Image 1 (cartoon, helix red, strand yellow):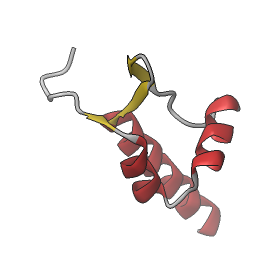
Image 2 (cartoon, one colour):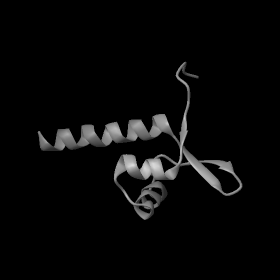
Image 3 (tube, one colour):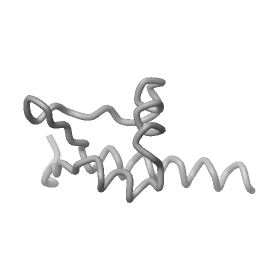
Length: 68
Protein backbone atom coordinates (compact mmCIF):
# COMPACT_ATOMS: atom_id res chain seq x y z
CA UNK A 1 0.00 0.00 0.00
CA UNK A 2 1.33 3.46 -0.83
CA UNK A 3 1.97 6.24 1.66
CA UNK A 4 -0.30 8.65 -0.19
CA UNK A 5 -3.83 8.98 1.17
CA UNK A 6 -6.45 7.38 -1.05
CA UNK A 7 -9.28 9.71 -1.90
CA UNK A 8 -12.63 8.77 -3.35
CA UNK A 9 -14.33 11.17 -5.73
CA UNK A 10 -17.93 11.12 -6.87
CA UNK A 11 -19.21 11.04 -10.44
CA UNK A 12 -19.83 14.81 -10.86
CA UNK A 13 -16.15 15.48 -10.17
CA UNK A 14 -15.11 12.74 -12.61
CA UNK A 15 -17.35 14.28 -15.27
CA UNK A 16 -15.82 17.69 -14.64
CA UNK A 17 -12.24 16.40 -14.77
CA UNK A 18 -12.69 14.37 -17.94
CA UNK A 19 -15.11 16.57 -19.84
CA UNK A 20 -17.15 13.47 -20.70
CA UNK A 21 -20.82 12.84 -20.08
CA UNK A 22 -22.20 10.21 -17.73
CA UNK A 23 -23.26 7.83 -20.52
CA UNK A 24 -19.84 7.99 -22.17
CA UNK A 25 -18.04 7.28 -18.86
CA UNK A 26 -20.23 4.20 -18.31
CA UNK A 27 -19.62 3.04 -21.87
CA UNK A 28 -15.85 3.29 -21.36
CA UNK A 29 -16.16 1.39 -18.07
CA UNK A 30 -18.11 -1.38 -19.80
CA UNK A 31 -15.44 -1.58 -22.51
CA UNK A 32 -12.70 -1.80 -19.88
CA UNK A 33 -11.20 1.51 -21.00
CA UNK A 34 -11.90 3.52 -17.84
CA UNK A 35 -11.32 2.81 -14.14
CA UNK A 36 -14.27 1.03 -12.57
CA UNK A 37 -16.02 2.66 -9.63
CA UNK A 38 -16.16 1.20 -6.12
CA UNK A 39 -19.41 0.73 -4.25
CA UNK A 40 -19.55 2.92 -1.15
CA UNK A 41 -23.17 2.41 -0.19
CA UNK A 42 -26.40 0.74 -1.17
CA UNK A 43 -26.97 3.21 -4.00
CA UNK A 44 -23.68 5.07 -4.14
CA UNK A 45 -20.44 4.69 -6.04
CA UNK A 46 -17.19 6.61 -6.13
CA UNK A 47 -13.98 6.51 -8.11
CA UNK A 48 -10.45 6.24 -6.77
CA UNK A 49 -8.87 9.61 -7.46
CA UNK A 50 -5.40 8.26 -8.24
CA UNK A 51 -6.84 5.89 -10.87
CA UNK A 52 -8.69 8.77 -12.54
CA UNK A 53 -5.55 10.92 -12.47
CA UNK A 54 -3.51 8.07 -14.01
CA UNK A 55 -6.14 7.56 -16.71
CA UNK A 56 -6.15 11.27 -17.58
CA UNK A 57 -2.34 11.27 -17.75
CA UNK A 58 -2.34 8.23 -20.07
CA UNK A 59 -4.85 9.94 -22.40
CA UNK A 60 -2.60 13.01 -22.54
CA UNK A 61 0.52 10.93 -23.21
CA UNK A 62 -1.23 8.90 -25.93
CA UNK A 63 -2.47 12.09 -27.55
CA UNK A 64 1.02 13.62 -27.54
CA UNK A 65 2.58 10.50 -29.09
CA UNK A 66 0.03 10.42 -31.92
CA UNK A 67 0.49 14.13 -32.67
CA UNK A 68 4.30 13.97 -32.72
